[in-house]
Each structure stands twice: as C-alpha cells, then as structure tokens.
Figure 1: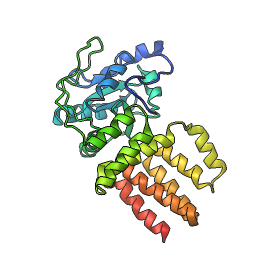
Figure 2: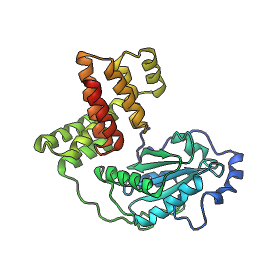
Figure 3: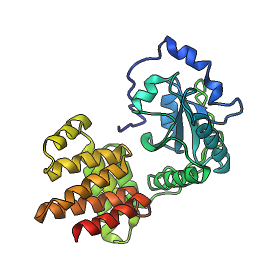
Length: 309
C-alpha cells in the first residue's frame, strides 16, 4: 500500500460502539507515562506528515493479545535510547479498527514504520530489545536513504495542535539523488530511475543509487497491481515465471521477504534458458531493495548460487 502526505492513508470502516468499550482497556497496553503517540483517525494525517521529516514506528496492540504490553514497553524504552531519531506511536486495534484495516494488520502485536508517509511492515509478535534495536537500525538506514533524517524534539503529536515538530536541519542529498527523490514524490518513476542511472554512471560503486533504482523499479511494477489477481494468476500458471515474479514483488512490498525469495528460488530451479536469467536478475535486484546485509538476503543469495548450479 502506497501512501503520500497529500492523499493520506485510505480509511475503510468506522469506529463502532464496541470500540468505546475497548478504550477502557488501553491501560493494559499503554502505561500512563508512555511517550508513544496514541494513533487515532483524528491525528493519523498529522502523523503521516510528520513521518516525512522523522521516521514513525507504530506498535499495533490489543489488551487481549499476549505480548502487546511487552512490545509497547520496549518501544517506549528504545525511543528514549534513540534520542528522538524516530517517533514512537501506538495504535489500539480494538479502538481503531479502521486504521488496523488500512494498514492491513492481520495479527497483533505488530510493528510497522512510516517513512515519508509510506508504510513498511517490520515484524509481528514479540521481540527482544536487541532484535528490536536491529530492526530500528534498519529503519533508520532506509530513512536516511530517503532523506528522512530529522530528530523529533517532542515525540508527542497533539491532534489539536497545529505546531510543526522541531527537527534538525537535514543534510542535503547529492544532486542526482535529490532529483530522483523529487521524481518519486510526484510518482514519476521513469524520471527517478533515469536520475539514479546517471548517478550510477558517474559512480558505479554508489550503493545508495543502486538500492534507490531497485526500489523505484519495484514501486513502478507494483503500482497498478491487485494482490488477489496476481496471486490467482500465479496459482493458475505455476510455470509462468513472470506471474511468480509479480507475486514476489507484491510480497516484498508487503514485508513478506522470505516468502518472496522462496517463491523465486523455487521457480529458478524449474526454469531454463532466457527465463532463468530474467529470474536471476530480478532476484539480485530485490537483494538491493532489501539490503545486502539483511540475513534473509544472505540466505537467499546462498540459495540462488545452489539453484543455478
């Protein structure tokens, strides 16, 4: 799901009377001294706009879901440790079912990031502080690549306040990276890819430009796809490598990284000739999207070498 600050996050459904009763249970997952923003339909647009300057990390919780209180507490603790490099937020899915549906939350607890108003699924279930730190470090790396490097002076977002968050000045992007970023903002993915190609031409070792180009290509490929239609096509035509690649693209955008790589590697093993080379190139490009140091990429890279032998 792609979101921009101008359009906001599409809302489906409304808060019903049952949500009023759920509000009485919030203390079980959100302590009184919590520093997290309490996400609601009233302040969602403001939070999305803030994520253009500072990454927002959202814990989706429920008083009835084991592990929710632990995830919320860990997020609060780490927010202080990271000194405002991200804004912690919390969404009670019982009180805000519309938001949970908009973000396609299937189970709680779950954690998701907003970077430049674009959602990025992080994990479901519980995580140790160390695991949580590793995820947050990855979020900050991705945010830095997108130029989202502000620091929140006050992590709280007041739905009734129109004051802009105080952020540190952002370091300028290299000119061609800025050109690409501007093109992405207006959803001109061809222009963004062209800018990244120029950057790579000037410096073939520009890792950020390669990652940016791969991400832009992925956004362009998935912009008009419908997940249900794509999955049905892949199920109906298991030998169609292009159908399998389309599902893998959607899985990557939805955070199902391992599923995407497993699907593509399985397809490589039963594909030959030119189609196999196209698959190999697609997998390598998706490695750039996820990040070469990601353990899932390291594992998939080994799997690809084995499948090609």
